Image 1 (cartoon, rainbow, N blue to C red):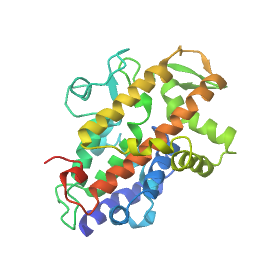
Image 2: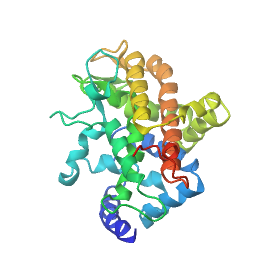
Image 3: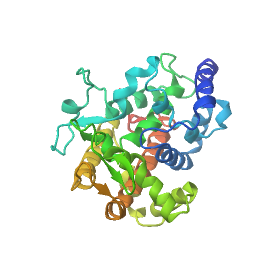
Image 4: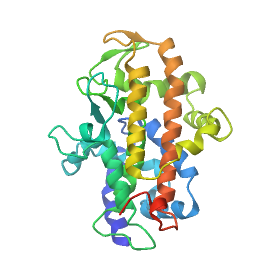
Amino acid sequence: MALIRLSIISCLGFFMINNYNAVQAWSKEGHVMTCQIAQELLSPDAAHAVQMLLPDYVKGNLSALCVWPDQIRHWYRYRWTSPLHFIDTPDDACSFDYTRDCHDSNGMVDMCVAGAIKNFTSQLSHYQHGTSDRRYNMTEALLFVSHFMGDIHQPMHVGFTTDEGGNTIDLRWFRHKSNLHHVWDREIILTAASELYDKDMESLQKAIQANFTHGLWSDDVNSWKDCDDISNCVNKYAKESIALACKWGYEGVEAGETLSDDYFDSRMPIVMKRIAQGGVRLSMILNRVFGSSSSLEDALVPT
């Protein structure tokens, strides 16, 4: 375990010292909130495992590295991970089918965000009672699972093929240029923080947490965590996202138009709920793979 930690510390440490403020995908803010929500819900066993796998300089804070997979996706060594951040579905189909949709542009199967979560959860399942499988870098697996659980809950990461999940739909967000994908990745989050919480991201996160602990979504949390097999679960999460992308992301949007108050007011609650669901479900996965039980049901990954 020490060798694994040392190797990843040298790689991540150099990168994060020089690029700590880099921002991409669900947005730094969205990924940070997803991981902070998850970490606060970890069992003692899972919390200990996460702390052991993280490099010392982040002092046990998983959210400090939750954007790492975005930051390295264009490095030569990690270029193969680029298609793992999203799923391209047939235009206007408004559905997800794993066999049909989970592949990269060359047709390589399992190369999508749903396949990535399955793969890296399977790798993490080998981390039990000091029997970590040395074929895998467990720290990287932890960071990839944590990040991709954010991505799969961002509706436009399960979008249409032709417009690349809204990336090619250029428009204006209030007074500045943007695109539909970026609106869902970051614009709605930053506008909510600015307009409703005086630019305080911590207050925004606390409001999200309050909604699922004793507020609007509190009765739904158990159903969010319902998961008997990781393959079934990631399929469910992807289907939720494409349904939301169709109903709330793409609906009524034309390239070149200006999106403002009406779009923000109606879509902001959806973005916040997806961040909450991503965090709650990430904690469920980590609690199960790092838990003390060795049953197949608790481990999530069939053998």
